[in-house]
Length: 479
Image (tube, rainbow, N blue to C red; front, top):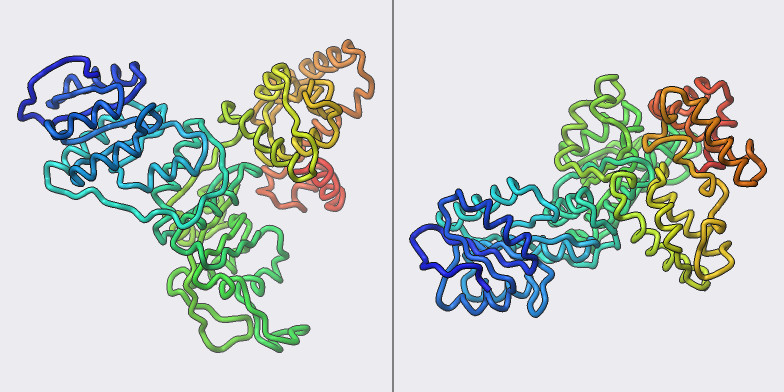
């Protein structure tokens, strides 16, 4: 019910609809200084009954409410008057539901928790649009259900918001994030929610293909273009025609190929290697990288004009350590998936294990979690997983050796190491060196790779190893 009964004036009317009393109070108080008339409702059903007698200028409503959801209420409102801007508030834990909210006839979407200034700015903008006679824009509904990306943390809610806004538009997107954060999942979600979802999705990792083969992979070649070219080959740009081309680890692309890519982005045409006739292509480009691209530009390793073309819309995928509230839901999801994959009993984490895992730094991000879930599903003896069932490297509490940014804890890292070693031995365990070695090697390798901008040969030299040694160790450590 409304918190107060007042007569409607000539001021713009704002309705706040939320079953959470604290949200109603905060918004009501924040709007007190504005020249608006504010009415609050604790249910969408109650608010819908007022539509016949009172016409609000803008409605801001929660999505998840009993009796009638915010999405259902929005349909009721727009059946009554399509010009009333409707702002949705929610904290969805999955991409599918969030995008359904965003890609509706809503004026805008506020992911919870939100900054009150952001909410006020959206309300102001909605009122100006409504008073100016602007119509609420409708967006295309997604053609397919998006991939299951889990995230109730504010940083992931922002990813969902951008995905919902951008996916229906034929615009180039650059996805930034650490290794293992799920950049390809975000790229696939952009594709599956787009109007190109019935056309090809072609992915290529530019860092995984040798430099002399990458040009052929991207653009194809004509028969006889070079020794060994015994037949014509179609490149990824042609394969993706009409659909989406995902260029993973774009920061590692050689500079000379960056020039060819820029030309394709500018005029939509290219030549096969050895070809004389231009080939037109219609693809949406989604690129991803873990690199600091402005820094790459400064060092002359990436073309600034190409970065401008790729970085039209940027999506920052947060590291797992920056969204701790998502760790357990992600683990539970993958435990379920791995049980189905191997036709085994689904494991359940004990409370002790949950608390322990939430506080780990997870340098490998979601990819590391999935590997853990595979291991636990196969190796844990019982249905309920205890600390003793964890892999040895996790039992040894990596957080005691390095912090969330994978650097030694404290200035005196030797003292920290000494403390960890004493604790390890006091627990009655053996194999001290075996447990510590991979943890230290992981830190050293990641530092060398970062310093060399992921150039393996340079990183190996920094470490004092041969390149083959570095390759073998990164594979063993799942880096």
